Image 1 (cartoon, helix red, strand yellow):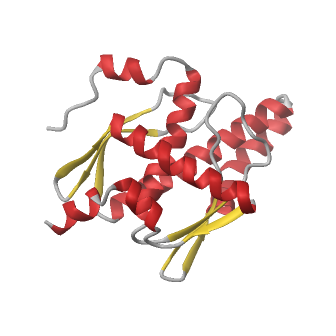
Image 2 (cartoon, rainbow, N blue to C red):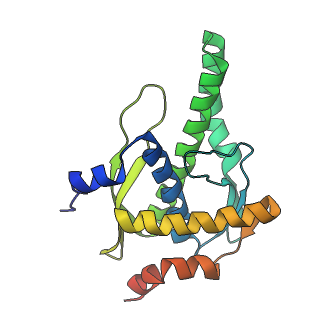
Length: 200
């Protein structure tokens, strides 16, 4: 039976709402790191840069053996109907658009999560707090590969932080950047733990 993150550790990681937003950034970066041995991906600089939460480059697409998945269009197709319905109901446009952006982010992260499951990873995770307004994130607490624990939630945060910094630096230089499959910097950050686990 998988163990869950102790409440004391969870409280240490999540002290305010910005910590939860930051964790979404770290989780996306970690999932991209796990998938990078199978795919390349393209990120671009966000139009609006945050000054409080961690900045996360926009994930444009991921490519597996020549097959490209456009995550911008994919997430929009799921989330735009709700946005348009809320506009029709007369909801404040800024509020509706903010929900739309959050929902798109969650769709992308959960899609990466699902692809990782297809590649043989599995996770001990907990759904984010239920909300009628926005979609729920599968918040990862532990990462497993080949039946073995690979990363704890604290390690996820540490690795996700470094991968995200790397991606932010890339888009600062060129606005849009494609990270090739088995990118050496990402593999170094991961410390080849995942590859060694699968090869045992």
